[in-house]
Image (cartoon, rainbow, N blue to C red; front, side, top):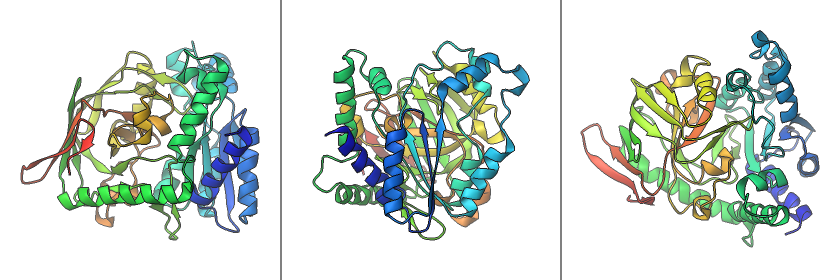
Length: 400
């Protein structure tokens, strides 16, 4: 597939299927510098569909590097108030959002002081978690292949071969190799929703993850329900937040997580920083120990951001039928890696996965950091309030 054809098809997925942009909507697009041509393609598709205005913001990782190296220590956590005000206005205006995840410069922050780097969490803007929780924005996140990203994923290949490989992988996991990608996605959404319905029928009280370095029990709220793929705004607009998506997820009880867990894939934070070998110990729902082979200070800074940052806001299950997982590649991009295997998230929870009575109990935070904890050697067991243990995933395969 040519680069122009890929850009056109991914833009179509983003606008028509993912964000489900409506005529008259303002569309906000975020991407890293170097992706200008693709963002223009998204804008063209949005305007063709009747968008009122397309607003694009770019993240420059080299500019962040300059700040970490040069800014005064006591300013690194500062974010101008209009950043958050802008996000709230996008929600009030019922805008659509498309976020492109594709690193053009993966090594931009390499070698920086991790303590200083951990204090500046941009381009993450905490107000987005509140707006997404209010479900006023129809949104999607999707990937786009870049040479810098390809070099990170396939260091053993030359540049041309690496970019070709990443392109083919993105075509596959986004189902662009199907005769009708939109129909293929509708079929996959139905499969994931069916899995969610089977999990909901079990009326689980908790989940237990057991594997190398992991023995973690996560409690669920009385109304925690499993959501698969599709989300709906408060105005009834369906959208596909992740393209691709292979997960079913729910909102856990933030006061009930006990035990230790070890990540099974590297975690890449939103600014491109990498965390490897992450280990977290929970007591009473709170992460009381956070260690890592690389990037531990970055994660400790995030869990200290606010009261909810050290508690769980999501637990998601992914089986080995995931197209992403079957590739066996570490993509160093959370959108893809979290849809390769089961994962949990520190920070803000999703309101859509609980009933109104439980909304006051869900976790609130300015962060939402997913990290992967699943795999073929990690067993997932459901537990009911009466003490029954129900195998859910064994060897990566559903048992229900």
